[in-house]
Amino acid sequence: MKIAYILPSLDSKAPIFVAKLLAEFFVGQGNEVAVFYFDDICKVAFPCGTRRINWGNKISFDEFDIIHSHMRRPDLYLAKNARNIRRAKIVSTVHCDIKNDLAISYGRLVSAVFSRQWIRALKKFDATVQINDFLMKVYAQFKNNALIYNGVKIDLHETERHREICEKMLAFKSAGLKTICSFSVIVKRKGLMQILRLLEKDECFAYVCIGSGDYRAELERFVSERKLQSRVAFFDAVERPYVVLKKADIFCFPSYSEGFSLALLESGLVGASVVCSDIPAFRTFSENEISFFALDDIGSLQKACETAIEKRDEKIAALKRRIEQDFSQEKMFLEYQALYKDLTKEHTEDAK
Image 1 (spheres, rainbow, N blue to C red):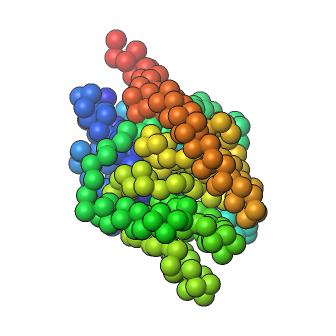
Image 2 (tube, rainbow, N blue to C red; image 1 turned 60 degrees about the vertical axis):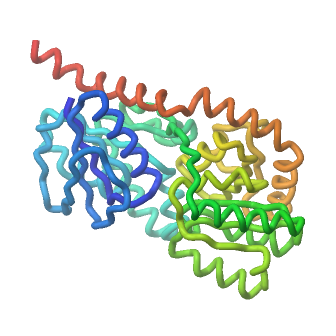
């Protein structure tokens, strides 16, 4: 089988990591894989050839059996060229609640225009993959809609940068503070300001924020204005950030909108007690596994953090069992393989 992945860039973001994992698996299975991307950002290495393209380029679509896109621009690119694709089957993994995600990031007017355009494009695909149960309901109108959870596998090798972050967490603990940790791209949609507002309300908590993004300056300004520097530490993005969670009391994921989080899965496998905003994407999990809080309700966040600490052992055990059962990389690989084979079945039949 010949497979192409179309990506917005090779940046270190969750959808790109998913594509990398799939590329590694299919190359390992003896398939021919190629990656095409738009923006000149190359932070993630792939086990196959990569080529930068632009909106006007037309790749040799029908050299491939499967062309699999991730995120808005690649989806629109394939939809634009769909009429020229005769043989290849086109697939997209939908990584977010499109309308809500765009509204939070860019405003409702932008969302009204671009979400309609994006969803219309996805209706041209031979198959779409949803990464949680909520998105399966939202996009029930798509043809050949498949539910495939993201899968993870962790590597606990510790580097000097990990040790530096762990030392800061230990310093907070030595001061008698309960340590919250987050790692993500730092944009408004991730809801991280809610954690800082909790620290302003409750002096028992400290916060280690790992990541970079255009909203980090706003968080740092809030910390400075509220004089929270003694209980907040910022660190730039680090490879395999979940390694440090063994020193944190809580991993917090306070997003306003999400598709699904590899970081949440990684934290669960490491053995973190997880707190999440109560949004549909996270309700794939139960209250036995995760502590939930109501968005922008700092009292609710405070209570969820206290519950996560009080019931730490039982929640960690329940979440780890669930992830190992439903969210392994092996399960994800086999489900994508089955989808690809089903889509290309007619190729095999035509060749007989």
